[in-house]
Image 1 (cartoon, rainbow, N blue to C red):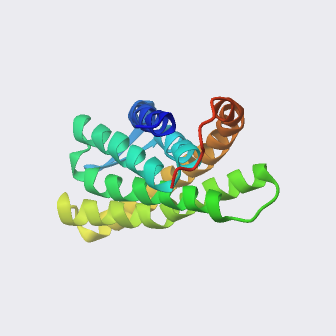
Image 2 (image 1 turned 90 degrees about the horizontal axis):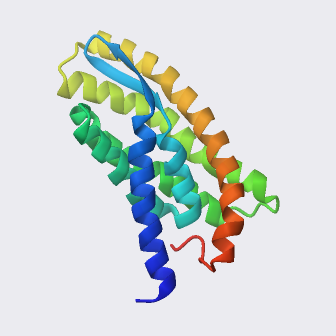
Length: 185
């Protein structure tokens, strides 16, 4: 196995752990049995996408944050977490790889914001579906909850985009120094 692939596997494991731990740092809101939270997991979802690419970053985010759900009382939300976090990272990583923006800072912010825009649209839908169909919350209440969840999604999106972008600019020179080929996909 070549050393670059070994580094990517090690970093993938690191991002799984960071996504899990980042999600542990949260503020939880409970609305009649349906829950939402503001957390730092999305920071590492985006950062993993920028460093490892969309596919590897998505795998790390979905495993790390999905495991958090499975081990911390969020089991009904785990299926949507696995899907949403993978797609967020896939979008952010793909944008980062494919966008033709000369200004790297702008490119990082646009890539992160693109992933979080997907989350802004689809996370409330996933919350509604989970609340109504899995937790048996009445349709009207599930709709109201999805609206409240949207507030947490917006806060998470803004916070994650800003923090992940800043962290990327601190980490990128070190990763280049160890000759890690960024964006493995």
